[in-house]
Length: 496
Image (cartoon, rainbow, N blue to C red; front, side, top):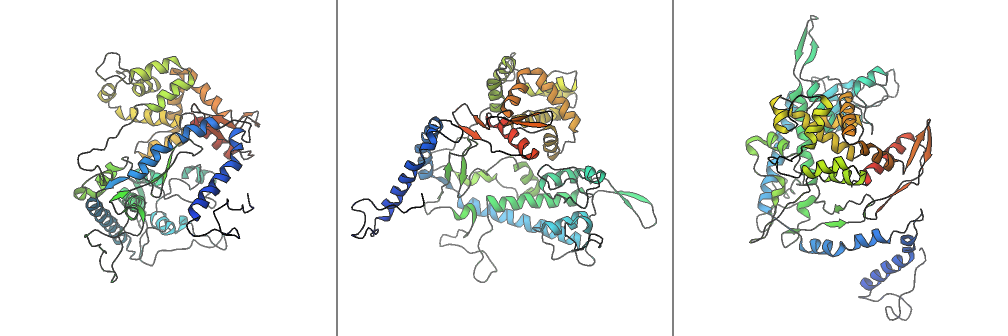
């Protein structure tokens, strides 16, 4: 592979050097040679598997990928510019409000250290001291204010609740998280913060609005990082630069990727080992609708259109959005071979007024929490428990994606619903009771990585093959957490 190959006959000069206009052919020939050298791995990979079926399944998609890349998506530049100005303005407004309350003119909201100090004070700002016995390092200037809240979560990959950190005496070892999940929980827990006056009397203070402003700023900044980007300033630096057509000029992000024909094109990769496609340069998979409700709340009267509406159809055509209803539950039922679940997910596709309609999530909710109501959205709403169905959906999809009870509890709390890990475990037990073959299916998936036998790990084949012939491989590991991560990925692989 490292040896330079000679050019084919007729591609170079007498000395064999490439001549002008031969480089494009040379690049194609080099790719072909690499393919010929490596294709034997498709016949037999490192685990002895033949991978040609997976390869050709993916190659069949290449013509469609090429067509999508060639065609591109038309962008409404005027709307994009207006939305950009709106989101930039919202970020500036939030920054001003936060700095004004904090009395901190140079407060950098992009600095995790400064944000930690604003939220938690110098004790948990994360600045490392040369001597553990030294007092905490203060970042904010004299006169600047901090909320002095107790952190909610750590920054670990498997996050810990800060109450557990305090209980285990790990405060000096753990770092407080300022991520969106941590901020959501922090906002909920800071509605009634107990404070002490100078005279020793206690009072309650609502700090949730200050936390939410930090969270809202994160949401806006995420849009300005991945979907929209702040425009380029003019040479004087006092206004945005415009092109000859009056459109703003961008030097990064999706707006920079718009071609001269007004369309944006992305590179789609169908060969990821997870079997999911990837979109790069730019990524067009970031146009989620999940946060539109949050954006509307943050922008208020300034909210105009959803972000996705900057992608438009040419005149006389339309864009069509489609989705599979309950796809994860359907695949779970098929792969597990659970006839009861299969019947339920099929009936779940019926109109809600059909007498045979079956609301999977509502039934699981009523069974888990022993609710005496009709197992429907309306039935749960009548007793004021409709939110439990939303929790049930999060739990069911969490199982499909290999999440444990604690991770699901955190995901539910991010949506503003306080639920304990014990309640999540109660629901999972009821879900597996309704569909008894499901738990065995997931455990079988995880055993492809390996299983624990009396605290001893027994390695499995370390590969899994999906229904499309795709392979997922798992390396040798001796770290328990890494092994558990791979077991989770193995359980999720078949659903993906």
